[in-house]
Length: 205
Image 1 (cartoon, one colour):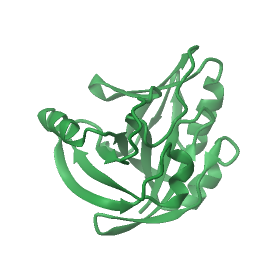
Image 2: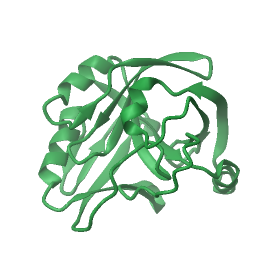
Image 3: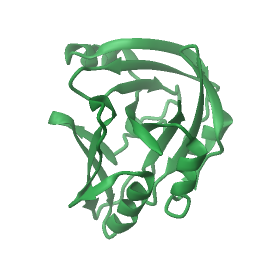
């Protein structure tokens, strides 16, 4: 099962500028790790595969944690599917008529639907997340990890295989499980795509 929300992943090409912006908003740098291997299991989710990437983890006592990542892809298109608004309001945008498919995926993952939103309620505030699902009739960008902007949502779990299997019938794509060394820790990870293409990262702890 999902233990809790972990963080949002913000892919950038202007790392120092974004770090300065987050610092001004009261975010504190938890750690940086550079030249991390880009595991081949991520290849389908990258417009341009680069051997390594850099990450900088930022935390804030009142807002969602954000991982700033640079894939060095040189790709400048901005993603338009995951949006962070003031007051910890999160919005994901899906194609018109696809809400029911999207809701099913998030409910299978363990979130609870209320109206137009899905949420994860946990006793630890940092593990909670509320996501509003909205529709758009315009053509939306296909999601990749190296688009600029918030590209994916990460959750922590005790068993990534069990969580992945729970959404097997409602997802559109899944990576194989793979290991990644981050900040001195070996992490087991699976990447998923919701029915409409929202990228989710499951991290085993």
